[in-house]
Amino acid sequence: MLWEVLGSVLVGLAVSYGALRWLPERYGQFRSRALTLATGPVAALFGALLAHSVLGPGQTPAVLAVSLGVAVALLSLLLRQGDHSARRSATA
Image (cartoon, rainbow, N blue to C red):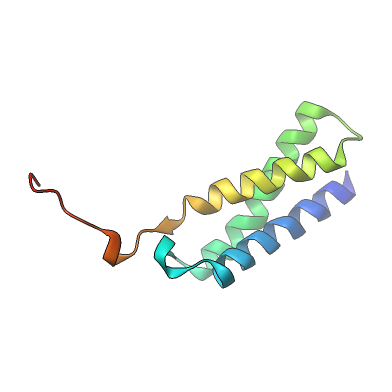
């Protein structure tokens, strides 16, 4: 369980840092750098806890895969669309 916790926190940090560093501007920007760096590990830890309680002990690769998916999904919610892609409809 300890390795799953440490692994999931490291996965979350890597995902959040990578998203801040290498995500192109055309996909949008994150609202806050500190919020992004905090959301990654917390989301991965939540995903690992959820996966460990569902799958049981001894499934470390699967738990880390689920924590990666949860971290990516929650970080994608923090993206804000760029100004160049925001369009208003004719009826608005």
